[in-house]
Image (cartoon, rainbow, N blue to C red; front, top):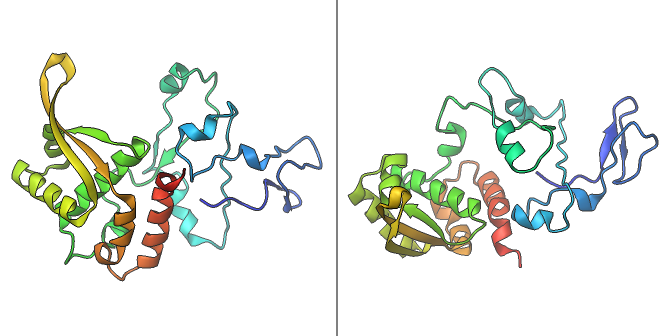
Length: 229
């Protein structure tokens, strides 16, 4: 999502208005500083203690927007009880995910170079990136048993992929430790740290020529907060 050059659109006139300026009191005028900055990690957006907004432009000429409109295969990801525990007084926004009956987004999955990453390597690669971003691009813990259970990757294959990712430079460090887990049980875990710059450098090898420009653009934006000072 890119920052728009307008704050909102008045529907009847279809006139774009600048941030923070409204002709009437019927429309919300959003100051630019109140937009959620996708180039920052989540917590950094709220250091000023103010609400943030996302502006989504939908065009009838843009066919790519169609899959993002909720339908019978969509699932609502907003959790009212979770929102209440986070001291949010009311549910004002609903977040949906599309094609939730599938665990694979085929149009994205096929963009990988099959001569560089096999299926299991693609799954672990994406899972590492997702967990790294969830932990605000800091070292994160992942129990060894859960890697196999959650991804369906056997122990030997798991370790060989991790070793290859370390050799490639994707994984900056993978420290194995025995930690106390739930119910005070011992849980052998990896503590992963990734090298975002190396990941970007490897994109021409990781992904095929098919739609590579789109993949590179999206992955640059996905990892952008890791490069923020």
